[in-house]
Image 1 (cartoon, rainbow, N blue to C red):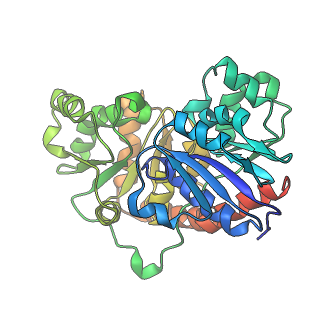
Image 2 (image 1 turned 180 degrees about the vertical axis):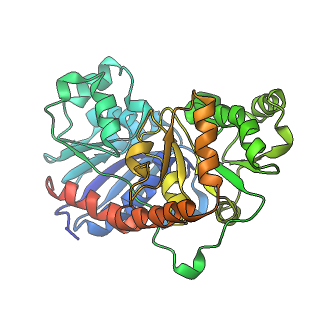
Length: 361
């Protein structure tokens, strides 16, 4: 792996969060810190990290709020060659940083970058030396609002997660069949497709009586989703588990036949990798970066299917195909694992990220 000359200052959201940006941030920083030959510092703010705080490599400057992060940023001169900004909102800290001619790298993730930015952030975008994105879709969506940056230096750096599982570690799905949805059930993220899958579930039950739809992840919409399931007559077939332990998540993945997240706004989707790692094909939407990650279709490296979540019949048909045992499912399962293992391990992500950063350090 490449090495980074000089130190790195990371500007990150809370490492304690459970979202994709936070999880990818923890992985990214560990790879950066290991590859850096200099003095490394990271500023992050948000919920307390408790015991995890001691596990962060480099010097951690943790604060509870963004204003306090500004104070931390301005309190000293930073002996670094690179500044890595892990969220577009954290660009606001740049004016308060004093360094000796460091380069700035901004990693763009998803919906937070696919919208008009404030005048302050738009101005600070011109100070970025290298833009990194988790997908080509994220970059093109960002440029819709910042077209003047099309000629800026940019690289797509797909994320990664974990390491391959041995053959004996992958369990067979159980019956009756189940579909798993992993993702926050938040009103601010209602684009993830939970409503669409619920609306299609009665058609799935016509083919697979007794099939279960399981939803895991932080949940603030239990009442709304339960009411929607009642409306469609499928409440007894849906389990809204909410936040679960890592062990329970692995159990849900092992038991399911496929993972469904036909989202309309994924910049990448780490949960697709979690499913493919275990040989579980995915239902993604035709609207976002899930297609890049999963490569849907019938090809030798296809990790599932892409559907229009607004088309209930199309979504139900996709779910039914990926729930049906047989040679086709076996091919998808094997292709999912192969796609993960050849592209999306954490080590492969680190290699891509450090190679990109090494061009500036």
